[in-house]
Length: 246
Image (cartoon, rainbow, N blue to C red; front, side):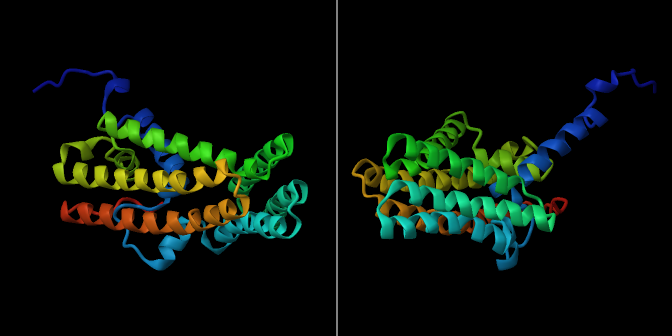
């Protein structure tokens, strides 16, 4: 039987499609929760790797801790916001000298410097955390929109990592679990805002700095673990092989 000729660009699985999928998968896998593969067995070491390893933890925690310590001692805006900037720059220098990837470190410096600049501009120490609150609001909005249109964000991430893109939506169990996982992340960002926003508006800077530390990496890692367990369980029940390693 003769098979009608088709346009190569229109076929599923063309080199262009595969290239796009791989690029998308690579981008997602390098960002936050995307570093956790749904089919991978959750372990302490793999979770540590997902949050950036020991170096990533130090780079994420130390600048905020530096602000808290300096502000508690000096009660002045300038030294308090300069301390985390200096620490972040030191991390970049160490990465450059050791020739390790420095993209996230540069991004960290940019965010910390922007927050410091805002605090110096207004003269209010609590404004050092304004950018973080805005990011939480935006993240919460994105998650809620994804749920409202019935394309839960965690499902999109899992779909990219497993190379099935949108196929998960056809599986009721997957769709339900990925929706629940997305709601859990809604809870994380909502909790952060519920605790930190009142502290910001009442100018309780020390307590705000402490809560940001506690509700930063520790809370993120805990929810990443829960999400990982949920997603892994549903993919195992579906009897699917693990996705390619990232």
